Length: 289
Image (cartoon, rainbow, N blue to C red; front, side, top):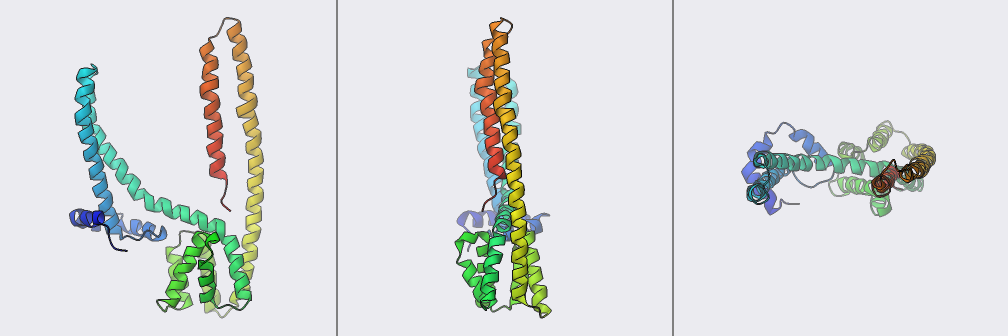
């Protein structure tokens, strides 16, 4: 894919600075593992451009609104510090967020690969047992969208072998370099060792499929146990605890030693915060299958 007009402009302005940045190799690795089709120098230059634009926008906003807030509303002149502090802070935040996006996407891909790998390995083992050659296995796997990012990795390996004419060992090594999943790297490394040593690749995939299926069952069992513990914690922290607290505060209010605002604080603030916290916590813990 070619550069967008914004990336070309950013590269013209900040390309020299981006090319000499200290963290450029790490950024290139993150972009490769995230499968983001853009050069590291162009992405870094684009990030600098967006950060500068964000700082400029916040500078204009503070220059426009600080006088209004200071004069019309009679607020303190200390608000003028926002003109100095807010723009660079906003620009740095945007720059850090953009630079962290490739690594974040790579980690997300890695988690998806780890979650789909037990099922994908079982598919590979079944295809290999039927006598299908590796190139055709990866081609077939690439067409199975149910395997998520593993299917994309398989598509890249098939492209290396079928389009670029690389042998299976070279294709597997290239896949090792670009995948963000340590478990997938280990699978590929084992496949390379098996091929180069003249071993039985079909037997290797069968063994790894059985191993991953066992590990997946252990992880699922551990997850169920964790969910049981979370359910007990929820009953204690979000049901029994607040109910006991409500009764106690209600008694105190009836005795004239408390205020109704305390009950309102528990009902309208504490209970929603606890329930929302548990909701997001459980949602983050649920694995994709």
